Length: 327
Image 1 (cartoon, rainbow, N blue to C red):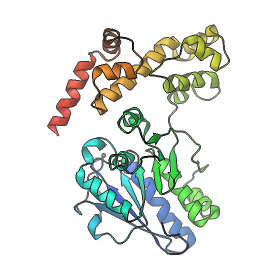
Image 2: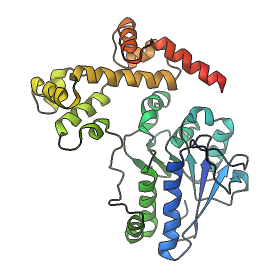
Image 3: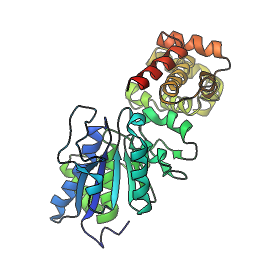
Image 4: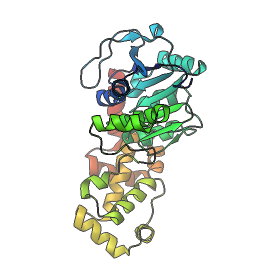
């Protein structure tokens, strides 16, 4: 990518896919607008593009105008793929070929929310570290084993810019602006947006338990993070307690007091929810999902799955396949 200082404005394209996340898109575009306003110069120029030039419907039902055909776009320095729900269905061979063409042109490429999936599908993230929304993390790791998917809010790895969803694109763009035009401008933008802190790439996304119990329960959160990181080969309760510096009895009391359940039950539900993600988002067999989620036998997995979700894994897989055919 040409240095932002050497050539202005920096030209940024946003490729919208069907059902993309509007909040992620908005949080990426507006920092560029504010950079121009705060600097008094046209540092950035941006365009919303689609494959055919028609506005694409976001997951909230809205479209953005003007939208132009990507073939009519001016030369770009950066291109961000805007993804959302059902991203697998939104990425076809036309999208893959388009992204590969821009990669050959040495355009910096990025993914917002699940837009990272499109880059991975095009083979443009092999050997890179990248971020994606936590709901898609388990499935995409299985599908693209040569790509390193990390739990950070966003990751800049050479000429790839990826982030999770929600407001994370705001943090990514503030860091891009800070790198290209300095900390003062990034700070001024964050003040305008009433952002108390510009998060950096060391910030992690989604620690589910933290939202439920609040801060001040570090041992409990640490145990939950270990559980989520060890689903294929589950840790014993004694190992978990030792890793967080508690006795087994102390750990059990914390889970009972703040979550009203045993840690073994909490761990089981983490593994079952990961199994559901794999069943819905991948073509892995039920046996493969059973193994990937740390279950020793298919009957045990099926019984546990039915106990949490009310139906066996085979019904989940059948329903997902029917939905894909309906599309």
